[in-house]
Length: 407
Image 1 (tube, rainbow, N blue to C red):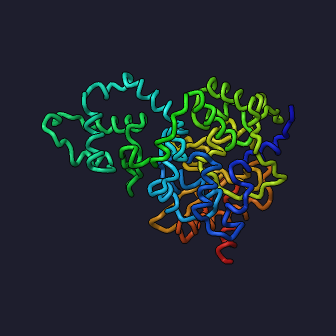
Image 2: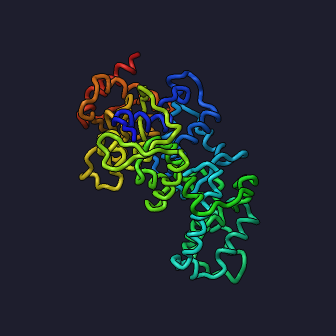
Image 3: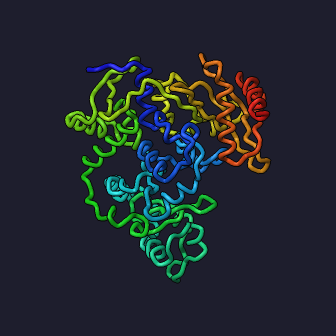
C-alpha cells in the first residue's frame, strides 16, 4: 500500500477540485471564463450547493468564482435554465445543482421518497392534490408556488385546499422526480415544471441504473472530485449511507478505479482515484464559501488543513467566535486566514467585519488577502473595501487595502 504525506494529500484534494489548473482561474491566466470553463469546473466540483443566504453572494456562485476568478454569473443561469441544459437542481448533496446526466442516477433516491409517502401526512391529508398540482403546472408551464397560489383553485371542488400544504407537496413532488426545478426567479423562488420540459430528452431516455449501480456511479464521481478521501468523506459528498458507500468503494477497488492508500495522520484508510493529479505545488489564492466542497465536511477540512471551522450564521451574535459569514482564505495549499465578509450593496462597499490569521500564516497573508478582496469587490461591482477593526489580522489587512487602493 502506498503512503501519502499530509501535504501530498492536500495538494491532491485541491487539484481534484480545480485549484491546480491556472487555465480555470482568470486572475492568473488573463482569460475570461467561458461556458467551456464553467463546464470543466462543474465536472470537478460535481455539485454546487444552493443556499438562500445572500450576505455576500449566494452559495452556488462562490465555488465557481473561487476556481475561475471573476466570471459572468449569467453562465450559471444559462447552464441551468436554457438549452442545452447542463445542470439541474436536486437533493444531491443537500439542495444543489448537479450535472443533468445524474437525473437517472438519482431515480433510486426519488423512488425512496415516493415509497415514504406515508411519512408525509400532508400528502394523505388532501387526496388529489398531487395530481391537480401537476396538471396545473403541465397546462400553465413553469410556475412558482406563489404564482400557483394566485391562480388556484380553478375548480370548485378544491376551494378547501390548505395552501401551506400545497406548497409542501410541491417540494415533495420535486424530491420524487414528478416535478423538476426549471429555474428560479429574481426573488430566488423555485419555478416548478414537469421533468420532460426540464430534463433533455436524451437524458430522460437513458436506462435507470439499479440502486447498486447508482451508488457506484455516485461514489466514482465523489472519488474523482475528492482526489483522495476516506469512506466517510465519499459518503458525505452525495449524502449516502456509509454502508452503501463502502460496498461501492469495494467495487471501484476491484475495477482499479481507486486504490487504498494511507495518509499521514489519518486514522482511517483512504482511497486515491486513479486519475488524481499529484502536483508538486498549488498556487491558489481563493476565498472559500462556507458551502464550498473543499470545506463543507468539517472533519475532512480539519484532517487536511488542520483548520477548525464552523459556520456561525445560526449562533447568537454575542456567542460568535469569528463572525456571521466567515470565509476561509486559501493561499497556496494552506488555509492561512479567515474573514467575515458582507456585501453592503446599497453603499457599494465590501465590508470585512473581522479578519483572523491562522497559526503559521506567512508574512504576505494580509497583502494577498487584500488583493483577493479587491478582485472580489470588482466581481461584485462594489466600489470600496472597508476593514473593521476586529481580529488579529484586521490592522495589517486595512493597511494593505489602503496601499492597494492608492495603486
